[in-house]
Image (tube, rainbow, N blue to C red; front, side, top):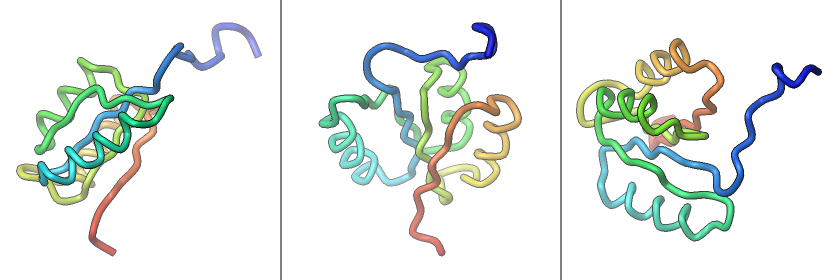
Length: 97
């Protein structure tokens, strides 16, 4: 594999973007994530539009997205993120089956 085709590996902690409409859940997840040696929360959003904006400005290493959001839809958000940032891993976290 040529050097150009290798993925970029950041030194330090992996940056996590949390997207959920429940502030208590976001804060609890953020606290647990920030306790990990190799992870840090770089941003939080409760609605799809703000989350999509933060992906572009914060360049997280992974996004944790709920399906139900304050405004917008988590599934559509995932589709939009993958269309624009196909390499970004996304973990969908939801109470829905």
